[in-house]
Image 1 (cartoon, rainbow, N blue to C red):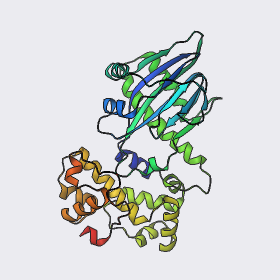
Image 2 (cartoon, rainbow, N blue to C red):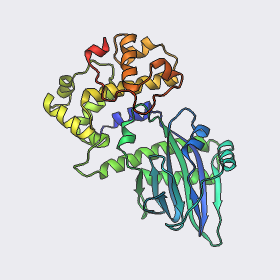
Image 3 (cartoon, rainbow, N blue to C red):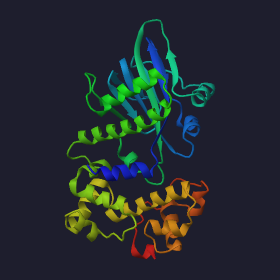
Image 4 (cartoon, rainbow, N blue to C red):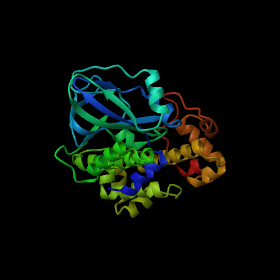
Length: 340
C-alpha cells in the first residue's frame, strides 16, 4: 500500500478531528445525527465535508443510515460514516429519532470537550459510545472520498490487539480521566483511528475492486500515485511515470485508467488543482508562486487551467467563491500547451 500517497492526500485535504461525545444509553434509546450544515461551521469552519464515527466501548447497539439496513455493533467495534449521510444510533434497529435542536448543538460545541450525552431509559446501561467527527476538504478533488462506501465497520468484538483496539482503550481512558489536554489527545487519536480503518478497508477489498484505494494496493500504480503526490511540479509524462513504475507506457495507461478511473495525466492535472485550491484557501502566497509550486510556467497558464477545470478563477476561489454544479471541466488534461 502506498502509505506516502495516502498520507500526502490526508495532509492536502486537511483531515482534522474535532468535538467528542460520550453517550451512555439505557434501553430503549436512539440518537440522530445533526445535519452537517448545522455542525460543520461550528467545529471546523472552512472545511466542506464531515465524517462521523462511533466507537462502542461497552455493550452493543445498532447504526443505521436513514433508509438503509441497520449495522449491528458490539464493544470493540467502530462505524465510520464517510458521506455525511443522516444516521441513527440506537438500542434496536427500527427505532427512530429526531436530529438534535440548535440549542443542544450550541451547548455541545461551545463548552469544554468531550461533551456528555446520557440517553437514559428505564433500564440499566446497555451501551457506552465515544463518538466524534473528522472534517476534510472534498473540493475540488478528493479521490479518497470518492472511493469510500457510505459506512465502514471495523474492529473486533472479541478483543482487538491491533491499533484500533489500542485507540479504544486510550479513548476510554482520556474520556474517563478528564486530564489536561484530553481534547487534543482525542483529536489526534481520531485521525489515527481513521487511518487504521482505511488500512483495514483496503485489506478487505476483493481482487477485482477498482477505485483510488484499489490503486494504492497495486504495486505499480501505487508507485505512480506516490510519485504524482510527492512531486506534483515535475514535468511528468506517461512514459516517465511508466518507467518509474516498471511498466510499459501502454500497460500503465490502461491499468491506471481501469483501476483509478481516469488517465494518469488527468489525475495529475486534478491533483495539481487540489493542491492549488488548498494553497489559495489557507495561504497568502501570490498566484505566480502557487503556479510554480504545482508545475506551471506562468501565472496566466495556471489561471486558465484552474478556471477551465474548477469553474472559477483562482482569485475567486481564494475569496470563497465555488463553481455551480456542472461548471468546470473535470476531464481537462495537463498538457504542455496548458502549462505555458
